[in-house]
Image (tube, rainbow, N blue to C red; front, side):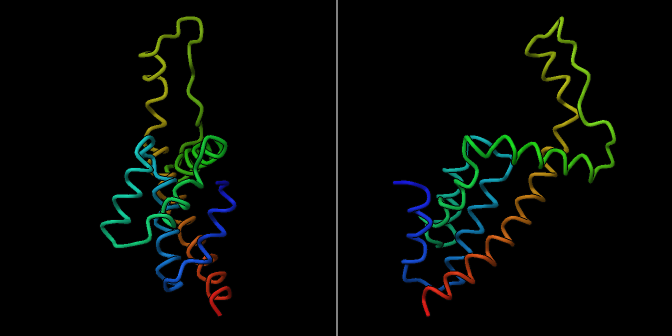
Amino acid sequence: MLYREKIRQIFLIRESPKRIAAAFATGIFIGMSPLLGIHTVLGIGVASLLKLNRLVTLVGVYVTNPWTIVPIYTFGTWLGARMLGMNHILPEIDWAHITFSALLGDLRPLLMPFFIGNIVLGLISAVVGYTVILTVVKKEHA
């Protein structure tokens, strides 16, 4: 089933608009979190813990997917770097002597901007997602 169809299913769920919007916003936040690789499991777990609709939460989680993850994480890292006052964001990489451990060392200064920026981006996106879904679901349920 296409992602677009899953979004349409959100509007058919007979649950309060606030709970649907909360589930979607939770999913967006989790999907944009820097916890790459555990988004699905985390989304199901948090939705179950908070008694939110798991399908709606997962639709929010999958806003971050193989096509969107690079621009989202890149923007989030840039945002985090700006928030931390970093003027020089891209590290100098010695491409002639590159090894996996050297690359990890070269990218280490981006870890904090990556975490901070993507958490802030996730929070902002969750608030926007909550507002949009709440408005649309209220109209659909009316």
